[in-house]
Image (tube, rainbow, N blue to C red; front, side, top):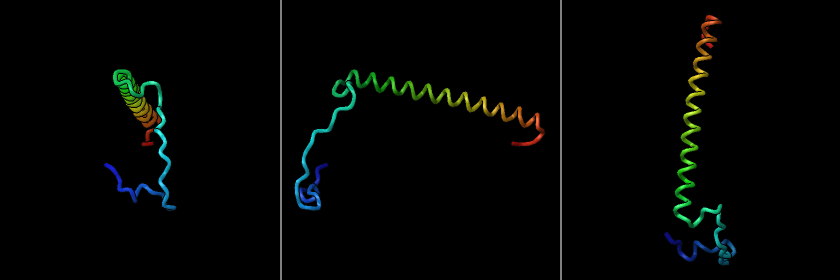
Length: 74
């Protein structure tokens, strides 16, 4: 999607300086390494989600125990 020439100009009517987009990380431009890095990141997110689910379940159990001890809802 390209913009018309008028929309590329800044308010002063000058063309913006074109600068290359900086590369981020060492995997830029290497599909196999990029895919591996994305897979690794996805696995980390899944693991964190599982840990969060376990912590939430443990917290729910603690709340239930506390409610039984106190005899009232928290």
